[in-house]
Length: 187
Ligand SMILES: [Zn+2]
Image 1 (cartoon, rainbow, N blue to C red):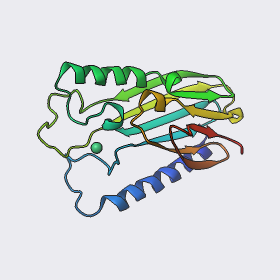
Image 2: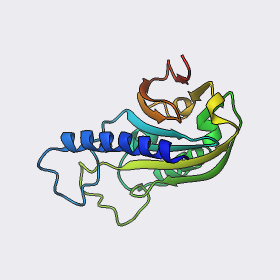
Image 3: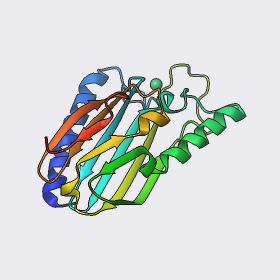
Image 4: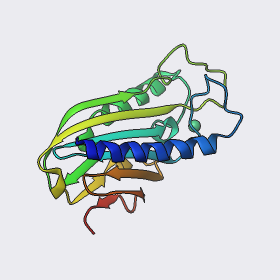
């Protein structure tokens, strides 16, 4: 990633964070309350496109992915979490990047809170997020044509995917849906 891209990304991030801050209001002092005003159904994704690298950060209410947000109790719930983690660990099955070839360098999926025995189970209003971070090494990123987000077909409870992206030359955001799951560049 060039410094130029990095600076733009930081600007984007600052904007995102200030909008979160604006939403969270004056009563959000509980440190154990780690949700950031997430809305069920909406999954957020940030794409940073460098010269030969793409970084993807995903943050989703756990309910969109596994159907619940408490620490898994039954064997079935535990299996659901592990199955989801396995699917999320393979970015090639979630994002079809057209026009360039990419290889996964790192893939980190965090399902903490869904498997932890220490998670507070009694709190009915606890929200839990699943996050993932991917780094892909790609042939010349600037020739990317589109990205198809197949994550929708794995997790139909995602009703909206809010994508924020930044490249060497542009930045933008788009809300994608199951019926419109493609981010097209250069049009
Ligand atoms: Zn929630």
